[in-house]
Image 1 (spheres, rainbow, N blue to C red):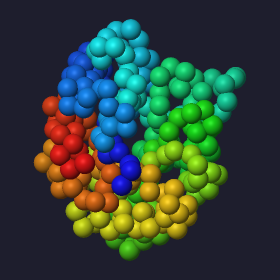
Image 2 (cartoon, rainbow, N blue to C red; image 1 turned 90 degrees about the vertical axis):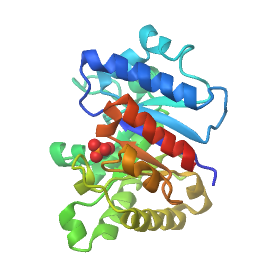
Image 3 (cartoon, rainbow, N blue to C red; image 1 turned 45 degrees about the vertical axis):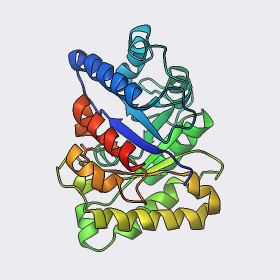
Image 4 (cartoon, rainbow, N blue to C red; image 1 turned 60 degrees about the horizontal axis):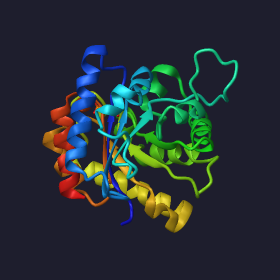
Amino acid sequence: MDRPTIIAGNWKHNPDRNLGESLWREVAAGTMSRIPAGEHNPPVKVVIFPPTPWLGWLVSREGLECLGNGFPESAVLEIGMQEISDRPVGAYTGEVGAELAHQFGARWTLVGHSERRIHFGETDEDVARRLTAAVDHGLCPLLCIGETSEERDAGRTFEVVSHQLEVGLSRFDKKHEYAIAYEPVWAIGTGRTATVEQVEDVHQHLRELLQKKIGSASDGIPILYGGSVKPDNARDLLGLDVVDGALVGGASLKAASFLEILDAGIATA
Ligand code: PGA
């Protein structure tokens, strides 16, 4: 399997000015001490998705000092946007698009997170446009998909995630680099984690779908699990062959718990 394990931290609309700096210092130091920076194509990498003002700070001189010599060439630790605009640079007050984000150090962007879909009305079509905008400007999108509890109870999980995947990737060319995160909506921020069997089922289904869609190019596309990943369940989830990493929300706000999840990723890679 030639895809890395990705342990991603989604800080959401946190942390405040006091907490962010120490969180970053500890996560950066903990990552660098666990994964040798000189290694190219490391088997495990960390991606942090901070709120946009923090993204600017992480690549400031002060933020980079936490890493010693700046972001290592080997891409052990990368940062990304939680959301990008699908608009180009120009007169779009309030927007931040992929082009600027990339120039300021972002390598990734989340697209289609359920909190964007639910609270801000983002549709699959919006998601498809943002994916294209991301890759057009060199960002690697992490496409988030997942069913609600009503959809699961109605037996529609496969139908829903297949549709989100199909439409999300509809404007896409298979040569682009991207990753998928399966995040059942009912497991996000609720403390309810999907069982190992539920995760295995959906990931297996998504892997087959990608294989049908783009053939062997799909082998390089990581499929992460997200939804109440914690130190005490990380090893079981990451130990599944079909799980290539974790997208961690709440537990990424404490360096110790995030690093324990990273340890589980390293142990099972
Ligand atoms: P959670 O969030 O780990 O707090 O459930 C995951 C996510 O929203 O990506």
